[in-house]
Length: 152
Image 1 (tube, one colour):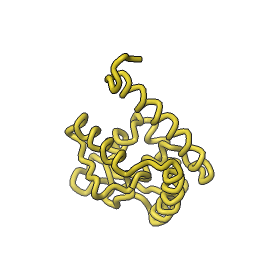
Image 2 (cartoon, one colour):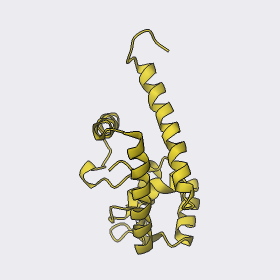
Image 3 (cartoon, helix red, strand yellow):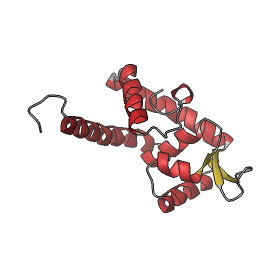
């Protein structure tokens, strides 16, 4: 793409390609459990036990609200997720993992981690990417110390 190694176009191309290939790889792992990458993103966000507003889940999962609603409906039908009215703002709905959802997340998380370990992804790469995300999105409220996604 560019004559200069590390040029912005190279970074964008590399990150995009890595995300697509990683999503494809994890999609195979998740398919054994009847999950999609999008559903996995939702489960990972909710695994902190705090419950999250649907608008936040939509943003973090990179899904439009209508698509997220259908996905969460499917997760509710599988008894992995439940919704409750936000106790502080009754106009908002918060999503949580059920006990079954917590167990399922833990079980699948082990499989995802094993798949990533096979790749030999250095933990510092994940930290650097998370730092990049924080720099690109300073409004992000995600705390790495509490991360429960596939990289931790």
